[in-house]
Amino acid sequence: MKFAAFDWYGGRHVGRVSEDGTQVVRYDLPDGAAEEAGVACLIGRDLPAEAETLPLAEVALQAPIPRPRRNIFCVGKNYYEHAEEFAASGFDSSAAKGAVPQAPIVFSKVPECVIPSGAPIRIDPQVSTAVDYEAELALIVGTAGRNIPAERAMAHVWGYTIVNDVTARDLQGRHSQWLIGKSQDSFCPMGPWATSADALDLADTPVRCWVNEELRQDSNTGLLIFDVPTILATISNGITLQPGDVIATGTPAGVGLGFDPPRYLADGDTVRIEIGGIGVLENPVRSGAGGGGR
Ligand code: MG
Image (tube, rainbow, N blue to C red; front, side):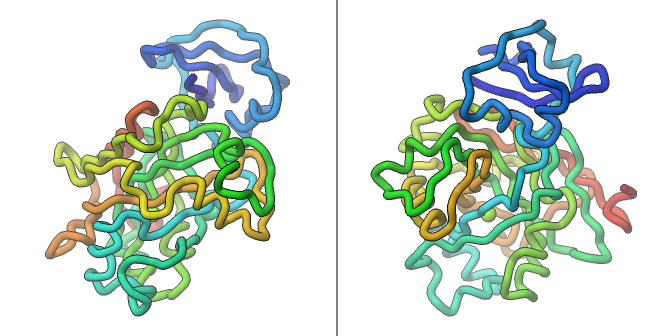
């Protein structure tokens, strides 16, 4: 099943997206329940009663979790070919330990940088001149857990969505910790909606990314270095994961810094990410002082 958060008639709502992706069936929820949590307000409860059916074209789609309750966990260098391209780029402050990590690299993005599909990724040229895209499968935690063993980890997954882990490479390279380069305003496009956990086969789910009409990333979640159970076991090692936590699993090869010379995002570009079983996350790029005029 697919679940979307959306604005309609001045309120924020959550609903079930039809199989063909053209309609959303609104759930009857208390006012405000979906405001920041979005689809996360469905976690740990029976699905609410269904209200009216609305054409998706007539609602304003929001990120499935518009404001995650805490930072988005992210895994770095989690596909072999991307680990190699990143180490070779000169921006990798962790490269001294080798291109391929021996243990998952985990960093985070602040909740405020989440934007929905369709909203602009904003480049402020006074801050960064090396803004890059990263197509990623993200999982949504369903049940809390600490020290989760890998063999039981999948029971903690509520669902999945798509994240574009937009990155300012110059900031990422300058600061050993990646938070600033990863958390710029608008740097976490998420959506277009979330799917239930049963919608994906993690051993074989295509991950593709186009910039404008050019296919840049073309991989499969079956090629992850550290798989989803390992990621959950690693992050929950001493940190209690909470329902609604979002974990982005890493990006495959083909990001802008992997080209020679690098091909970073520019004003007027469009980034389109498609993950089989979920859908399409598409965002325009806008450049301007102050982040494109916002
Ligand atoms: Mg990433």
